[in-house]
Image 1 (cartoon, rainbow, N blue to C red):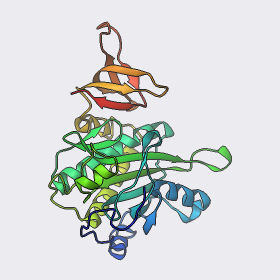
Image 2 (image 1 turned 135 degrees about the vertical axis):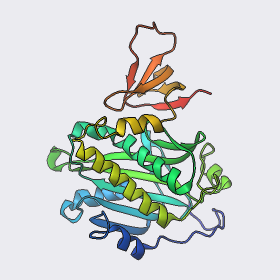
Image 3 (image 1 turned 90 degrees about the vertical axis):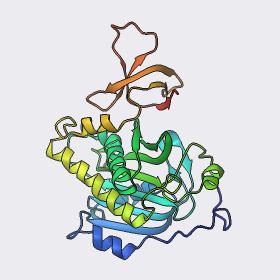
Length: 290
């Protein structure tokens, strides 16, 4: 999609206050080792992965890259989108979690839990996680999350992971519809207590890192850190009838009963024998059946 002037609504959308964000978030006063605020980027995740991969020493963790405008945002299953400039929060957080790599599978849900907390506490909205990594308000998508591994050199162990978060803040209904996001919403449309992106960036960074630290203190144990319980409480998918579009084109219809120890969605297949164990889904596109 084009970003030509006049395509988007004429709303007051100031740029991020980079100096103030650096003062608040960079060490020693803040939790970050590096923060980059850019005017425009294709994808914050792709940009951060490229920069950190090319020069790992210049990108100590935790580090954040955030942008006023993201022209080729990326989502799960190869989806991409474009949002009006300065209409949302687009940030990517570089982590080198001090937990077993097996625990990294919880990071999408961890990020969802952190975002839900910010939307509830800062925006005053009843946010929930749609498994595995979308944040909704009343079944309307407000935020997408994409977690990608930073590969190690020469095929070695992963160097880290990038957690991308995109929150619609002031996007109008007509702009969402024009982008093909008819089922999406924004903080402004939901009557948020704030749409200040500087406030939201600060809150999101701190919430994400607080969840990571809890997981690290528990040695990567999602139950011991409380993450499993927080994820279950926040997840609107649990207890719902769902259709899961699985990789490869198969579909699974049934009831979402819970999360297993790896964060997978447990779906009891419709019409299955009561003694049959639920299916553990690690990847798929979930549709809530109304």
